[in-house]
Every structure is written in structure tokens, then in C-alpha cells.
Image (cartoon, rainbow, N blue to C red):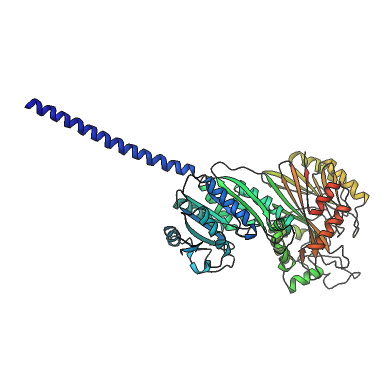
Length: 589
């Protein structure tokens, strides 16, 4: 009996041990099943954010980016979407608005992530303002796509106002990245370049794509986009999520889609997503050149009666994007009263210029200019005192300059995207020795990646460069200059390609009151994009209006100047056709 009891007890013990083993194994297996699954889902969320247009002209582009991201994240069921839009009407209160309202999208109710809404409000990162989201196309145009491609996701909508500070955008990105650990996608609903025409849109987009790829947060606010704060948020959020690789999907614009270049409604579109991986560095240098700027005489009167903003108000977006904007500041900045204002041609002092401190400061700010060319024949109109005041003014306002009549070698060197760019001046009218300038170029070429020679030369109002200009330009390129830009004639002159380097003999006027001929009220702005082994040139004809403003030329005015420029330039037939389109390219090798 005792033996049977012992055997029974042994069997029970074995059964207990087996049961414990089964339970433990089951628990262990269950735990292992769950943990790797979570890890797998985290890893398989290849895309955490993307940028899409909201302009429905680009509906095929919108469809494509949503479809692409859905395919990339096919291994997970996206649970939450943060949809970020500009606040187009600047409605409501505060920098950021959030909606906690459920929306009816394609006969289905889409709920917001209420916990996220409450969190943002509690942390004072956003104000809940449901009513201002009604009619906001940056949100409403993308909600159907979000519902279609991520049907299970809760969609939380944010709107960001103009001028949203980077510091606040950084905090918001950190909070959003920490709130949802997985299965969340942040979408920036944004259109890029506006109102600048097809060629400048393409110029601006080149820079924006490099900024997205390089995650250059500090440059977000200067991009030609309708939501700079959202751009910063997108990049910072993606970096925090360790998804730093930007993958470009589409880049186009409404002019290209409609096959008609129009200024007023042109909009550009960039789509792409951030995925796991390190960032792809794009070394892009973006320079923007314009011609002669004169802020005295009738222009001074216009600024007094209207405003400094009025001069470039209708073309202000053209200044967004470039690393450097360079033009010829045709006179000194001094504390003297104007002696040319209200004079007429031929009268004493009609061509003696001085520019006011405050208006010049505002003009430079409006045009986002950080460097000016001073090597012109008016910089000494108020003598040594005027020159000293000009230099002090520029230093006080952190504006670089190049072109000093008493220092022939005067240049400005800028570090841009890891490269060094040297700007060198030549002034034909104040005794500059071209051989000394050429020697300076040769020395600068040894330590700089790109050398620009900006010249003040030629004959006023002559539409063709003279032999002296040609000889000088060729000598400067032989010495090592990579690009030659000309000023002084007050009219646009032809382009030449010499030893695979571009020479713009004259860009004409930019801001000036010379309204006496069709040629003097035309100007040319040139965008230069340097990337890899090629230089892209984007040409934008300008119109100087009798009211003192300058605008981007459109239609026949634009086409006529580009046609004239192409037909009168000493270039190949293929390049002539490119110039007529407003864009040409030179391979550096």
C-alpha cells in the first residue's frame, strides 16, 4: 500500500512537472511570439514621414506618393497619422492649431487620435480650434488619400501659422516623436515654389531637394514653400525617428503639367519620404545674380511715398532659397541728404547718388541679400567719407561686400554647403588693373572651389559687348574664373560660353529709374545651381515699371527677351534653344 502510494505520488509529481513545463514553455513561446512581432513591426515601418502637395492640379503626384508609402509600409497596419498643413488663412489663435473633431471622409467617419489631441493641448503645444479647419484645403484635399491608403488610421490634423519659430518646431517634433513609438506616419501637406514662373521654380526646387536630403534644418525657413515651419518639423521628426534617408519620388510644377508657363498661379511640387537609413548628402550651391540697383532719385521718392517693400513686393518669392544673392549696389550708403532727387537728366547732380541708411537696410532685408558688389563708378560719389560710411553701414548690418577701388584685390569668400566660393571684383572705371585682378583670381582658385568674377565695364546702353569686354572676360577665365557676371551698361547684353564657362556680359537694371527706352526697363536675373559635375543656369527676365517696382516678366515680354538673348549670343544652336526655354546646363568636366 505504501509502495503504491509512493508510486502514485511520483506519477503526480511527474504530471505536475510536465504541466509546469508546458505552462512555462507556453508562456515563454507566447512572450517570444509577441516580442519579436513588435520588434519586427518597428523594423518593418520603413517610412515614418513624407511630404505631399495639396494643390489638386497635382492629384496624380499626390496619389503616387501615398501609394508608394503604403507599399513601403505594407507589413504594418498604420494606426495613427499626423497631418500637418499650413494655416493658409492665418485663422484662429497661436502658432499651431489642432483638430479633435471626427470627419466624414468618403462616407466613413475618421476619428482623430484623441489622446494625442489632449496631450498637445495639455502641453500647450497647440490650441484646439476645430472650426478653423473647415475649408482648409491643406487638410481637406489630403484626407481622402489618407483614408484610402491607411484605412485603419486615426488622423490628427495640425495647422502651422506663418513665422513659426524653429525652437518651437523642434520642441513639437520631440514631443510627437516621443508620443507614438510606432505605427505612426507624419505627413507634411505643402506646396513649394509660388508665383515665380517655371524656370525659377525649378531653380528653387533644386535647393529645396538638397535641403530635404541633407536635413538642413537651419535652411527650412528660407525655402520657397508655403509651410516652412512644417518643413522644419518634418525633417526634425524624421531625424528623431532615425529615418534620415530622403527618397525623392516626384518633382514638377503646374506650368509643366499644363504645358504653359504662367507666373500668377504657378506652383511647384516635391514629393518624397523619409525611410530607415542615413542621409544622402547632396552638395548643392545656389547663387542668384541681378544687375544694377540705384536707391536714390525717383526711387527714393517712391520708397518715401509708398514703401521700400513696394519695389519688390510682386517678386518677393524670387529671393527664397538661394545661398547667396548678389547684385551691384550702384552708389554709397551715407547720412547725406540726396542731391539727385527731383532732378532731371542733364541737371547738376543728376547722377550723384547716396542711399539712405534705413531704406537700404530694409531693401537688403527684403531681398535676403548678404553680399553686395561695390565695384562701380558711383561708389565714390560722396568721396572717402561716403565710402567709409558705406563700409561701416555694411559691417553693422552683417553684409559682406567686394569691390574696393583702393584695394584692387578686394574679394569676398563664402563657405557654402562645405565648399568655398570666391567673389572677385573688376571695375573698369576706377583704375583697376586687369592683370592684378587676373593674378588675384589665379591665387584664389588654388584655395577655393568656385570663383566668380563680377565686372563693371562696357558702354552704357550698348546692347552688344565690345572687344575690350571680350578680351577681359577671356583673360579672367584663363586665369581661373568659373563664371563672369557683368554690369554697368544698364541693358541686357548677350551670353558667351568660353572654354565651357559662362559669361553674362550685362544683366541690365534691377532697380533703377531709367524709363526712357524699352531696353533700360528690361533686366535679367540669373539663378546658378552647382551640383555634382554640372552647372544649371535659370534665366528670369525682369520688368522695371514706371511706378518704381520691378516684377518678373511673363508671356510675350519674357519670351521676347529670351529669344533676343539666344539669337544674339555666340553659342551653339542647341544652347540657343535652351536659352529660349529659360534654362541651360554646362557640364564642368
